[in-house]
Length: 214
Length: 299
Image (tube, rainbow over all chains, first blue to last red; front, side, top):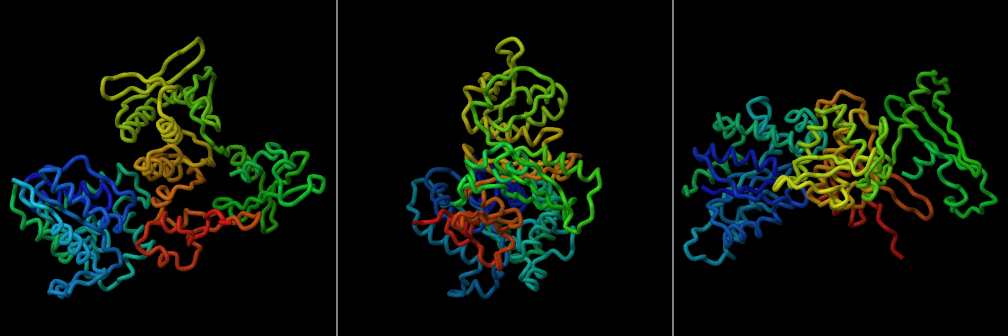
């Protein structure tokens, strides 16, 4: 199964590929070459999604596309957002879904081409929280819900980096190494990740499990 | 950068040629350039008296307590160890006459000698440098050497595919600049204070993350397993792309504002409500917009 991943950095994409393979219970074939965003962060991901999805649809035989972004201090996705008309403008999962749906509506059918299947998730407050899941009991979505400043606070974000990388300024190889190591640990117990991050990771997991295997 | 050079080398500039603050050369007597030190010399001030006849520096503690001889020596060593690099690709690529203990010149000269010494004295570091080179510029896999004439050394880069050795003089400017900054970060004893003029110059925007890594390697050696003193790095940039990379560390960004004939410096983290101002936007975009200052004055 050929899978493309879009996230805020190539390091995270390496880890997400591993998590997706774990959710599917089979190896996937990452789409190369990976693209990079000019700037790290959520706005860049949102801007790139339409072009990425169109490129995958028209120019590749990719089966599935996963998008994961950090929630930072945005409102957490709630069950009420799923109701018709219930989407919340500042909820990042709602925004991802809106942009993906709009783009999918613009895609022309391609002969012999099955539409690209899409999965979306948000890491609360950032993907480093997933990487530490199971190592610190207080890192979970509920804690973040109760302390919304966590995602916006420079100090807290950097503290999270220190937990994961032992430095607030990790190099590219170190970030990749730690992200991949964390993902390899997490796939051994995805149920823990899903129970601690039922909203952001849960959404991704449900989407991925709904994919028809290519 | 030039103010720092005026502190370190008061004789470097002719004051009458650079002091233009509405002063007539005949009225210029002495200009003071004052440097405030941070940890581990917090509270120490170095003052350079810079005038038409050259200049000199002196250190003093704000508390009035005298500096010990060893502390004064330590400060003098740091000041004389400051290097202000304004790299030029012709200098970087030029063959160099062999000499003991070559040091990278501020224009990038003697680079082949520095690489040669690193290979001979620190082979493990040299191998690590080659590996990192392969990550930055995957088309190359190794630094090679040549002796273009007796007593001279030049360097080449070997292509990963085909194993062709390209002389330094045939390499792109971006490749030469990137390799020089990378090498600086892998030296066993880099200068204590490294100033870099526009480290993003000539570099593909995708490589800027690697340049940031190299600068952090100098400043935070413990984070990469190095056992040496951290290097204070000062770098200037006008690149929004490069600035974006420092979004999580506003304390590391100093914005230079031109106000009339003065330059004022403001640390980004000192701006009130900076996190709210930045919101979700890339730092480079916000800076470019002018909201943070540090943009050319429009007529």
